[in-house]
Image (tube, rainbow, N blue to C red):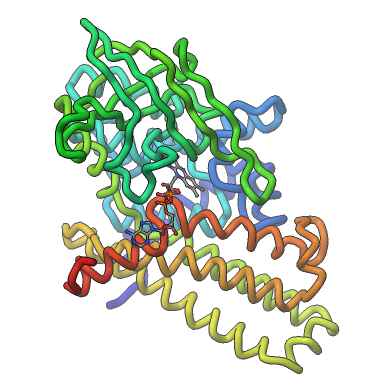
Length: 403
Ligand SMILES: Cc1cc2nc3c(=O)[nH]c(=O)nc-3n(C[C@H](O)[C@H](O)[C@H](O)COP(=O)(O)OP(=O)(O)OC[C@H]3O[C@@H](n4cnc5c(N)ncnc54)[C@H](O)[C@@H]3O)c2cc1C
């Protein structure tokens, strides 16, 4: 496989680089320099920040992407998306990841929009898609519950039809960015008597401040407020906010999971962290001596090989998408490998700095790797844990028997 750009891809790459060089706000450039890139959902949090400079950066960067129809590069052009080919999306994501530029639009762009395009009514598409693109509405994802994560079909949040409304009671958990979101899409149980996959519906709560909804913060182990608990007490929403058929929401909800990514951002960011670590070792005699005298040289070389492997996983997925195939266990393999590789790289980098990495402080030498290690843990849980990904690879990929 020749992975060099064709002339058309090279021209497209140039356009993306040009945009990044001229329009990426200094705030995101500085975050990329200091810690490899803005954190996840930085754009969403900036959009609602108390700091006017953060709000301005979010709006500036959104405007720059919107002018090129790159807010939702993967959506068809008829719905206001970029209508880009898989290869152009890949190049765009690669360049954004290389620059540490944040994505914009959140779950509305990556999850809800593509699902509405498949399952929504014309009215729903007209109502919701434009406000996702113009940053008017940011959506959060209400799937997981305290007793339903890996076993999502066991969810218990109840929605009961009452005239032209649904009335919702129950609880969601780990709802990323709900505190900065305007709206919430969720899976709810509408028929408790049916087999568990067949009694679920997909609902849109277009205002997260609807009476009866309480969003409570959960602080993660890095000390950041990233996700939340969301409680519903007699929350009334119009029945027209149902997506797809009542009790068939499981299949609507699962469409979301088909919008797999190549994870090229993961490979690019692994390479960037490793390059930076190597440059630090070369520039510091003490670190050099540490690395020379122990097994760390060997460990760093392993991480380098693994980073190359991650690029190959990403390329495999993009070549499948280009051929019109839908990655399945291949996407699980890439997700599993990428999330665990990020942890191993942070661990190796922390070992290079020894005790200095115990100071979990991005401003201290080595401290950035302590915080990076803490930050790499959640990716092995969200979107299907590593164990769940291994189950998928074993059963769907390798044809091994189910337990
Ligand atoms: C950073 C982050 C962001 C998230 N954002 C959202 C969000 O926005 N919206 C949302 O709805 N959810 C979100 N989640 C929740 C996420 O989807 C769940 O945490 C995940 O699906 C795991 O579910 P659980 O936490 O209930 O763990 P459980 O399912 O209870 O799993 C506990 C342990 O048991 C293992 N296990 C479970 N089942 C099996 C099995 N069949 N075989 C082998 N091992 C198994 C798991 O691997 C895990 O180690 C987020 C999670 C994280 C970490």
